[in-house]
Length: 83
Image 1 (spheres, rainbow, N blue to C red):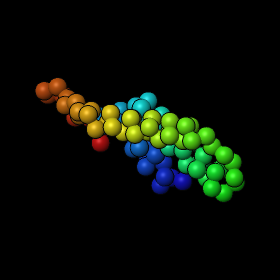
Image 2 (spheres, rainbow, N blue to C red):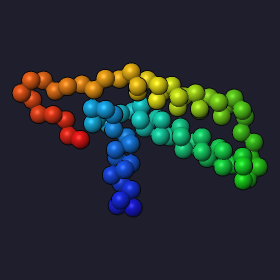
Image 3 (cartoon, rainbow, N blue to C red):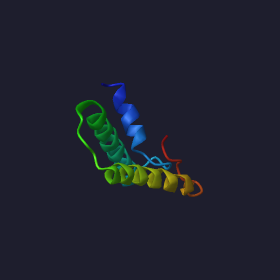
């Protein structure tokens, strides 16, 4: 579990090293998408197709927006953000 904690912390940080709500929402939506797929495949619980595609499109929208985000450089003489 201790090895997993730094990985999860890195997943929830943006390009500037700050925690971001977008990363948290994408992670939660991924968990919901996987849980709905598991429920449908192994337990026969029907998930409306529109819900499945809504979750997938929200995840895609969040990751697509991330590609446009530019890394902010620190001001001259300032300390660089921690990696």
